[in-house]
Length: 556
Image (cartoon, rainbow, N blue to C red; front, top):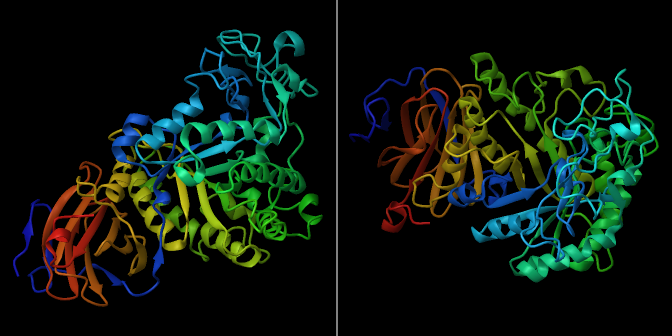
């Protein structure tokens, strides 16, 4: 049967069409195997421009990061902590109401709920909040005043009394007074904030904020927030705060879902801030259990009255540590290949990280050099607290303009769906019209008419995952197949389906030069399809449906 194609560069051939497939990568799809329903919350982001977010239609938006560890909701002031001279920065200027009109948190929730997105809001648990009398203009309160603590290596160009907490000789300033910038608070400080959010937007069960995270990267407090928390965070402190603050959240809004412990990366999967990356005295004092495993054990061993859990989602952060892989504009061939191989750190039990993680070794059952993050976390959940959901609320596989970062982002969605991630938010939302944004569009609006990838992940196997990644989905009367070409040259792909997936097919995709668009379409009479010359460094979504007119037209 002749093929109809819209772009001369790409000819798509159904079974029976003439064409060479000698060098093709074989992909098999079985929509009845490995069926795992996935949540649209895996397509979430942190922050981003509200207007652009509404256009893309992100289903989840996180208010998180270092600045949220110390946020005073009563006066709309946050601490910049180690990110910028430990200063208290004001938001809204009108403090005649609590919280002030126009405060950042209310604006964030209002905008996100306005386009139908869910909100993940961070509740600080560090026990300190910016002082209510924090100035509304320069000079701001700062954790390491030069006048009080002496000369320092660096100061804020706009506030020369605000130092970085490092003396001129390179030693850290210690023994400073946390009250210079902050006031001590308990969980009771935060329940009125949740009550305000309920009054303004509804309860978790009625359209308000559904998700609350227990602070941010708690095992880094002694560096990021060392002006108020200089001691390393321990197993016991983290759990005690989870129990106290999580209980308060659920007492105020029983339908709320709580996320914890919000790790910073790889080391605090295994040990606390008091340990030496993986192992140390704190871990030894807790039966030698990896921190996250121990934390999960506490969640299930300490239910709230009535049986609810204090934590519903295991919340992890993960940034691949390979050279120039994560927070980089480097898109060279070597980095692109390394960036895409680093995806295996999420699921492949045999893959050794191409980073300093390999130096951690493979001397016990934890296989430290082989991250397999998602499968490791899911195994801990199954063993220590079954039923806990899994969230990855910070990750990044390259900066917005990288072509390989965009392909990696598309494949990440396939991995999240296949491996059982229940929620994910990229740090941060990609800028408008960037390459990485195209990966979100491919899943959230592949045809420009609102059609999205949804339903269940099903089995897809590529014969060469380093050349072509393959991830299949079934939902809305469609079988969908994501194909990522990870190479610098065009790739041919032969797709074999275990059973007929339908009669009508359309291929959408993007590459380094083309945004998401329809590439070709046609009919399928059998169970095989040959695709010729998928563009270099690209992601393509094959959508197959039956003969029903509404589905043929892309009805969702």
